[in-house]
Image 1: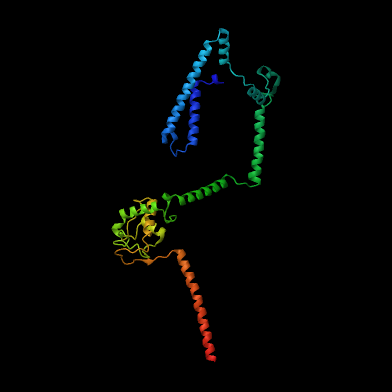
Image 2 (image 1 turned 45 degrees about the vertical axis):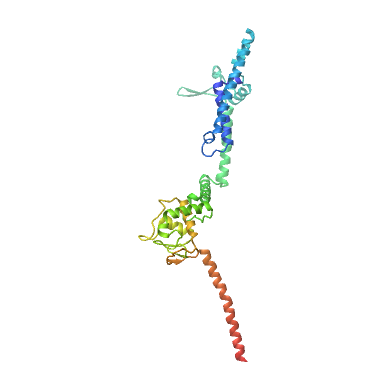
Length: 326
């Protein structure tokens, strides 16, 4: 079969097949492997040179072999090179599917009496491939009707809604792990040293003029106490950095200057000032901020702490009554 495919087709096909396998097994990111890794490019060039060399060597050997033959052998050799393979099995399958139609010379024997403006009809058998396709279409139609109109399976609209919902879930899950796509609803405190270091750098470049390097506050409020003007916690701090402070007298919005990841980093760094002691702390501004979970715990603790007091009061009343009676 080799002589049936020219070398100018055979060599590129083999080369690109090998290149595709290399690309499949070599993890190179977004770019093709030969662009990311020079060794892969050198390997592919070497493969191409080897293929060309093999074609040249085989061609030379064929020529030497041909020259060594006598005239009769040369004729047989050339005949074998130009012989068209007989695909007997494919031909047999084609004949079976095409059916046994009457040749045009015998159409007079199967012509019908119908005549439509000169158009006559032949009583010829349909080819088996057409008949089989018709039967398959009937079976498909029955299965489709039973599945979607009798058993009420999910149609394409329901499937679309399901896939749309799954895609949204996947997007939300991706956003939770993708730091660069966070907003004030999904942001969480970053605790990695690299993020806090980046947040410190951003703070020193943009925030120390108003809040001082130690967070003690100057033009801006003190960041070390428990009081917050626009709410504390990572979500409120992120939103304040992104959208800015109070109209006319708060800090400007940084969403046009900083990326979401950078705002999350500097917000996480700002929260590190909580509980520290600055050199010149500014007076507290705003209200004391307590996380929602902490508020609930504090409320429960107060409620529980009242129970022993009530019990003690009851005991005291009982003792007083006994002493009075006596």
